[in-house]
Length: 446
Image 1 (cartoon, rainbow, N blue to C red):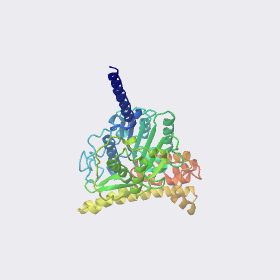
Image 2 (spheres, rainbow, N blue to C red; image 1 turned 120 degrees about the vertical axis):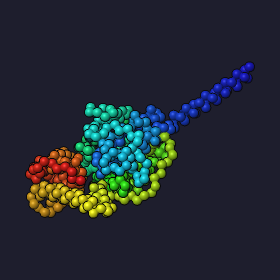
Image 3 (tube, rainbow, N blue to C red; image 1 turned 135 degrees about the vertical axis):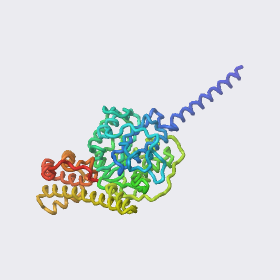
Image 4 (cartoon, rainbow, N blue to C red; image 1 turned 60 degrees about the vertical axis):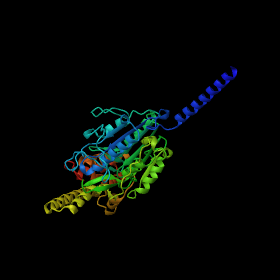
C-alpha cells in the first residue's frame, strides 16, 4: 500500500513539474495571432493624408498596410484607418471598386474598414485618435486605447515639407506631434511605439531632437530631412502610380518574412538598402530596433505573399503630376487628346513657375535686392532653428499666397522660410509675404 502511494505521488509530482514547464513556455512564447502575452496588446493607426486620384498611391499604401496587419493577427478593433476614400470609385478609375498597390496586384479595397474618411482626415483628429480621444465630428469613434504596456504602430503616407506633414485640408507640424508623443509617454499611454512615415523631407519630423531617445519611440522615414521621397509602380491601365518606394519595400518585406524572427533593424536595413531613390532614416530609441517586427505588426505566422518583380519606375513624389501627364501624352494615339494633355501639362508648369516667382519676389524684399543673399535664401536647405518663426511664416504663406493643403507643390518651397527664419524676424518675413501676395490664396498648384 505504501509503495503504491509513493508511486502515485511520484507521478503526481512529475505531472505537476511538466505542467509548470508547459505554462512557463506558454508564458514566454509569443501567441500565434497577436503579441499579447504578458498582457501586451498591439494597436495600429494607419493614415493616408492626401486625396485625389493623382495621389492614388497613398491610399493604396494604407490599404496594403491594413490587410498586412490583419493577416498577421491584429484584430480590426485595434486598427484605426484614416483615408479620404475617394479613389476606389473615382471617375478616373477604370476598375471601380478596385485598389491595388502593385502591378497586377490583388484588390485591396474589399474588407477595408475605414474609420475616418473625407473631411474627417485632419491633423486634429489624427492626434486625438492617437491619444485615445474620440473625435467629436463623426467616424466610427475607434481610437488607440493603448495602455502602459501596449505596443503602438503608426504608419503615415502623404506629402511633406521641412517640419511638417500634410493632410487633405491642413498640415501637422513636427512640434505638435513631438509634444503629443512626449505627453503620451509621460501619461503611460503606451509601452513602446514604432512610427513609419512616407513623405518628402519626412526625416525633419524627428531629427535634431524632435524625437528624443528616452520616450520609448522608434521611427523610420522614407527620406532624410532635406530630400524628396519617391513614387513607384506606374500602371498604364489605371494611369497613376500605385505605391511609394519606401512603403512598398517595408510592406513587401513584411509580406514574405517570418515577423517573429525578423527584427525592426533587420527590416530597416533591408528597406534602406532597397530604397535607392532616397536615404531612409531612423530616429528615437534605437534599442527598440532589436525587437521583432511581430511585436508591432502582429505575430501570426502566415504563408508568405510574394509579389512579381516589376520595374519600380520611380519618380520624385513632387514630380508625379508632371510624370503622369508626360506618360499619358506619350501613350496618346488621338491628336486631340494629346493636344489637350499637353495643354494641361503647360498649365501645371506655368503655375509652378508662378509659385517660384512669387517666392523669389518675397526673398527679394527680404534681401533688399542683394542677388547673392537672395540666391542663398532660395537654394540653401538649412534645418529649422526657430520653430516659432517658421510655423508663423508658413501659416501666413498658406493663408495669403498658396494654400498648402490644396497646392502640394508649394511644399517644395518652404525650405526658403526655414532658412530665412535663421536670421530674419517672423514679423519682417510676414510683412514681405503680405506685400507680395495681395490676392486671395491660390489653390491647385500641383
